Length: 121
Image (cartoon, rainbow, N blue to C red; front, side):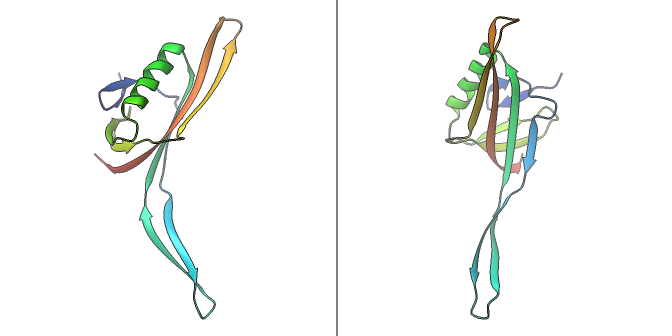
């Protein structure tokens, strides 16, 4: 059975389409005397955005505990497909929405985290 592990914490399984890997380029540009614009790529980073829809209070608490334990620390994350990344998450990267289910009489949480990743492990 696939699992998602961050450091020593087993995380709730994300949505089927809940893991997005992007490679934004970081660069600088400046105008040259001849009127052209010079651009230079300064870094290639990798970002993992993981989305967990409809988490229960207990699942959200376990995710919060892992986030609080590894806040701004680089830790190994193993995705459900077996890929491993060294990731770090920092401030303002926890995005959460909550909603009430009147039918089930309980709260649910939609949480997404954005991780900065280095080379796959």
